[in-house]
Every structure is written in C-alpha cells, then in structure tokens.
Image (cartoon, rainbow, N blue to C red; front, side, top):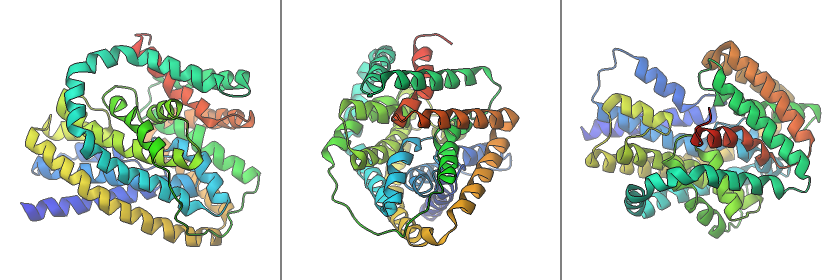
Length: 393
C-alpha cells in the first residue's frame, strides 16, 4: 500500500505541475474528470492522495503563467500587476521566487496553527460567519477610499461588482473562469499588445525578503476565509493587505502564502465542518465523504511532502522560463495565449462563458485605463459575497 501511495503522490504532483504551468487549465477540471469516470474503481485513499498533492502543487506553480504570460488562475489574479512590473524590469524570476517563498511559508504556517485553528473554529465559526459581510464592507470602504481618485475607484468597484453579481443569473459553469480571466488576464495581454511590450533579458536574482508583514497579513485573513463559503484567496489577499499595508514584493509573498494556505485549510474545513471550499475538497468528498482523523493526518503529510517538492519544481521551471522568455516573440505568444484562453473558457463554460469573457475583458481594459489599483476590480468577488451573506441574491 505504501508504494501505491507514493505513486499517487507523485502522480498528483505531475498533474499539478501541468495544470499550474498551463494557462486556463485548473485542477477543478481534472477533479471533474475523475468524478465522471464510472470505471474508476480504486481505493478512495489513493485518489485523496492524488487530488491533495495535485492541488498543493498547483498553488505553487500557477504563479509562473501569471507572471510571464499575464494569464491568471482564479487564485492568482492579483499577482499580475506587480509580477508584470518586475518582469519588465528584468526581474520575472524574482516575482515567481517571492510567491514561491510565500507558498513554502504557508506549509510551515499550516503545521504551526493547525490545531489552534481547529479549536478556535469549533467555538467561533458561527460568530465569524455572522460578521463576515460587515468585515467585507469595511474592507471595501478602505480599498475604495484610500485611492487618490476615489470616484474612479468607486466606479470600478461597483461596476465589476455588478458584473460579478450578474453572473449569478446566467446558466454558467465555473463562472469565475471567464470573469477573472477577462478582468485580470485577457485585458492585460491586450494592453501589452497595444503598447508593444517587449520582454527584456531576465536576471536570476534572489531578493532579500521581509516576511513579517506578509505572514501577519496572511494569518489574520487566510484561516478564517478558508472556512467561509464564497470567500477565497482573492478576498483574503485584499483583507490581509488592508489590515497590514505592504509593498509590491511583500504583496507577492502574501499572495503565495494565502494561495497555498487557503487551499490547505480547505481540507481542514472539510474535516472539521464537512464543507467544501475548493474543487479539490469537493472531489474528495465525492469519493470518500468527510475524512476521518487518520485520513486528515495523511492529508497533512501529503501537503508537506508535495509542498517541498513543488517549491523545488517552481524554482526550476521559473529559472528555465526566465532564461528563454526574451527569445520568444511576445506578440505571438500573447495571441496564442488569448486564443487558448478563449478555447478553454468555451469548453468549460460554453457560449455564455465566452460572452462573459469578452465583456469582462472590455471592462478590465476600461478599469485599467482609469489609472487606479487593480485591487478595486476585486469588487467582482467581494460585492456578490457581501450580498450572499446578507441574504440578498
């Protein structure tokens, strides 16, 4: 049995590497395929190991296409602006490395606060559930009114919020895929094409990293958001950055921590309260229901092992791509990426998804033209979440 567990661990890492490096391909797609296979008659624990290692690996590597191609995953959309700025300044690998360090730190934080978080959530889950809309309203006010141009900020926040809320009325599968791909990905690629962006030769540098602010920001937001429906990595990152203001490099570390920590705690959420917060936990629940204590211990071990391996893989691929990216025709790869994203959105979300992609891309271009922080476009997620918790839908 040990050999099989090891094989499924490395199989999950392999698939997580592929999904992390491939724009538009998410682990939810692989999970959906696994669930739909009627002939898949394996010991559920093997599939749990596979899905867990795939999910954790994905959270490490998915920053690479966000930085080098401007193609966000649904959890890395906020990394595009600081990552792309570093890329244009010959520091693309540095952006990947910062998020990668953050993801590695998340593994240690998960181990450190796992037991206290379980005890805390058992006693205060309902209280936090009732407070979350008011916390998000407070965060929204801070995000909007700390901008120099408050009117434009409010317009962007409300406009993208309306767009996000409107998706709830559409017969759409995986609605966040076209929404966030358009707002944060395709819009950025199109503007790069318009401005004829050229990628300079990249330098492989390892920056000095200040960890205090990213760690505190993540600890104050990620664990709670992991247990709450409708609140994901994006909202947690905005909350963490509002609570403790961070510079560009610290923010990339924060994103890495939150992306992996939220994924890790989603397994804890399934174990503790039986709720699925990610596609990975939904797949696990489909196979075996809520994990037992022994199974949860195995999941934590898999998270640790796959996290350390994924850290090495991310540095490896980050260096390889950094050394070759300037040799690639950026315009051609941008057009190819746009076509690929359109195909993926159509296959996953259908015609309506393609329509949402176009609308959200145009919205993203308009919002970027107003010269405000792109965190304001998180209204697309925050406003629907607030309305959900207030019972307005």
